[in-house]
Length: 83
Image (cartoon, rainbow, N blue to C red; front, side, top):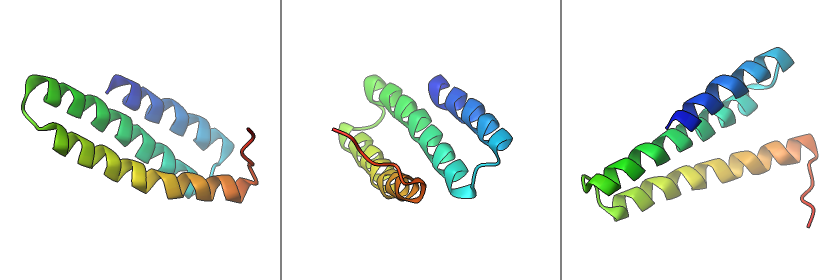
């Protein structure tokens, strides 16, 4: 959870200095929220307060939301994957 909060704070600060686009900032906020939720749900699963099915559903929902956004940002910047 701390990693997600730290990621949001540092990356958004760096992007403000570079005048990054809104989509890039939205992706950063989404990724930070993903990390915070991942940490929180990991704790709740360990304590037995939620089921692993709920944990998996939420993590997959975040992942499926972030993948298209990441692909769009990569295509917009002209970034190519290298093997």
